[in-house]
Image 1 (cartoon, rainbow, N blue to C red):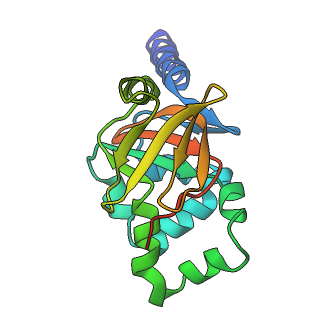
Image 2: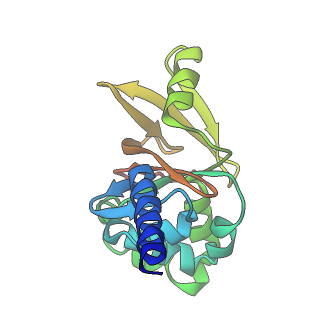
Length: 182
């Protein structure tokens, strides 16, 4: 009986180790490929503003659904770069539609891995146009060896962490919030 228990514990430890090996760390928070975008983001202190915004915009159910989705996830520091009061204003109930528009501007349908995006940029002679879930477009390019996104207002964001696999898509962490035209 003891041997069976030891074998079971060893199997559980092996499964845990294998799961951890597939995970990606975002500043110490482990992102697992068997969890959804929202489940994983909720474990990261660096993505707490994004998670709060997703909740305020009633997008939790959507981003927990099957997908697949590619999310360009701005960190808290990215939100901090916005003009003072912008985040608080967007989080107000009367601005839910605008918040939803900003957040869905960070989402592309499908699994767009870093290698896919690099190929799209190369095939596009230096740029790739990504259609976002809100209907807007992001322009991807490579500058100084890093993928950058240009938003509708001409501002750029750098992808700082790539290919964070989720059960319903992939997340790429960005250092600046991208903004739609309206």
